[in-house]
Image (cartoon, rainbow over all chains, first blue to last red; front, side, top):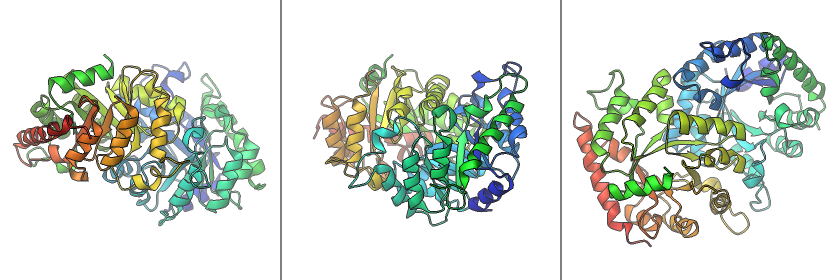
Length: 272
Length: 272
């Protein structure tokens, strides 16, 4: 199934554009799990079981798994296995390398792990991104304007009358032969998000930075969705997965997810 | 030991600025190894044993290991273990993410794997790079001008009278509080390499793209080394590790490494 079809179906079914970031830090687990074998996997399964009917997608930032050592591969694979088939799973990897090397990353992410989509860094240009886009059913979210402070260092540079991030967006749109391209735009930049939505039409946007990073829900939702209130992926990690600290962490995560989903939904059909 | 001290010592000891890229593709192993348990590790050990006194450094591109699945972590760790302590080991990962996430990558690369240096992508700016630079003894090679065709898409954009890659270099120089910053500049761009060397002084440059990618040895060596013929890391992968195809692959790799090291050395003291 093409990523857009899958994304639209789950958005409609769960009435949600909420993406829960499974950025599970082994050092921040509830006390009753800490130190147990497979604690991270058990935690992830708890969160997934409690939230799968409330979310559109899950996102695993691979940085949080690389640190697990030899178990990392297995924990990622089994976390993905725990996610219902119709929910979108994004591997947040921000890879990008010369062509034959990007192909290895794309294979690992899309074939071995089975992610539905991944994030890719733009700096190395077309031949570093194409190996990902070549998986025509899989989603590729290219970094455009990121949610962090450092986004100001290069992404806003003026390149002949427009910003670098806008040039990245416009250039990459020409690479979108399989209709599977998307962009990453931080919720912390609602005005710019609106400008990007204006350029990209119905292309999906992955929008991190709600919650701990300070992105405003109303502003970023009105700016980020398409005309139908769809094709946007609003990620929150810490605010949801660490909502509770004890045995009831999954229940608390569900409550936080429902609150945020409903808050987002309030503005989905009020596009700015 | 600080990365510069380690780099200078091995450069002098082995009379070499050659970096062998252990980008081992499980599908391209000599027939007698293919299909064996731990074939990649055995291959790497063979290459290392045959070349360790000829090289300055080894570089492992993590893309080639992620595809190994559950064994990946172990193969990387044990490959690093097989490398003599005084040879520099670079983890070519091209990571870069928001601060707390970059910290996780830095920990995995520098603490868990024990790489001496890594490559980092610049697009997300200072707070995405700093968690790597904070490991003051470890080397951080920031992508400046990459060896691939796609480097033309964004890296040459004019940003107020200079190229984006030059802006990245100049900006990042201000972040170099621990003296552990370096840059990646492709051997395929010798004129630009010379310009970057002129700006960065004695900062180390990681220079991939010799061999299969078409970089010229004389031009890129004269342009890339510092005034003392040092502080450069010339990477070749495929041309060395696949020099032979049978049981004598390691011997052939040694011959190819010696040839390339000596070819490079011919120009190290003829800085352009």
